[in-house]
Image (cartoon, rainbow, N blue to C red; front, top):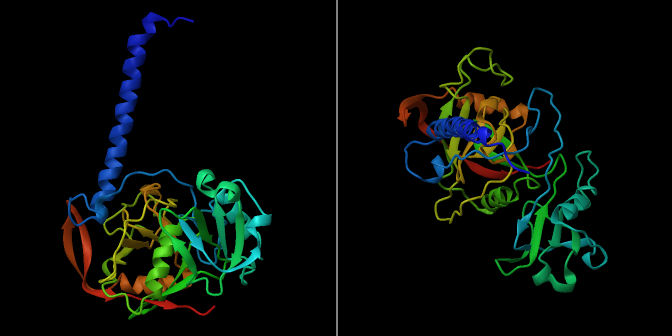
Length: 337
């Protein structure tokens, strides 16, 4: 079937125009997000803010909101977790790591109690696994916050992940103003959660701190909802800091779970180790950040206190930001639930 020749010129011009308009819009969003979080215009991780499509919702962080089901179930490739088997992979095979993860999730009661299965191991590399391809081992870690690793590295053929019920997978972030509880998302951001658990295992997190603090101002209400016709900042309603521990080697974390930022969302700036905790719902930021945890509504008061601490004004790439006069030190702690 031939194409009408008299349509070709106009059609190409129209498509090109639409493409350029879309590209300019994306570039504008990219540049805005870069300057909001980056103190300089280098290509370091702080300014790595490419737009990433993701799911629409994280959690409902309104007062009294219930935790919603997240639509992902992922693990870390080239990692084999050990532990007591509750279902043997030699007798249980599935087609994907997600199916294996979901099988483990189904062993959680959903009432906040301990899951019968809190870790899973899947063999998904057909060539490397050979006759073991598809094996799904469902396991129970004695200490899910310090999982037993059997092997890790590029030559490991297994993919492993953790599963926490509603009352599990919570770590404490101690400050001079109280302890913040972070509910980790190992099913959606497994590599991020794995790094946080590594920090939890350290005796100290030297260098971990909050260095930027900006209140909701008059732009967002106490529940984090944006006030109609108000500006989107500055201030930007966030707490920013770093989880880089001096003496430990940090490896960039790839993009994982990128939902809409909600009040209480804990997310990486770029590939980490810089992070931020949102004090408001930021629909305008689209799906640009890996969210690896959330702060419960009861603990937001601590962050609101930090947001009122004395700051000094600074300018990052033309954007006015508020930097704490005295950074707030952070210490990871186990939480008894």
